[in-house]
Image (cartoon, rainbow, N blue to C red; front, side, top):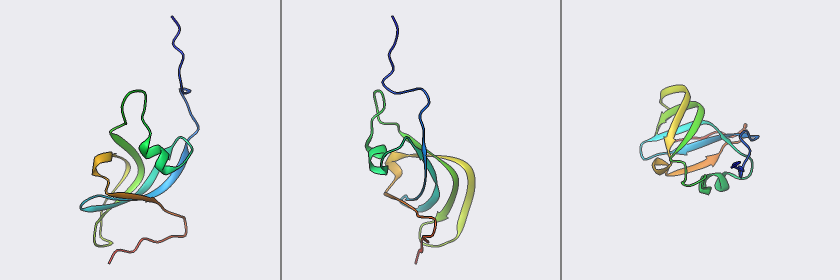
Length: 98
């Protein structure tokens, strides 16, 4: 029996720079979504379950209430349940924490 895939194995992804706040950190990095809107990606379900982790590249991790960078990594995977809020970051936008 031949399995028919609902989605292609490889799909074109959109690179989206985002700011993510958790309970104690601010993360600035790039997520790679399969087109569409950020909310569609966050609410989408895979083949059976919502993916628990979102991959992030070029991630800078800061203290939540300051611009003190704690860590930089080329790859980070964050648990969806840890995200308090997320928003896209324009190239000319700045995120101030006071």
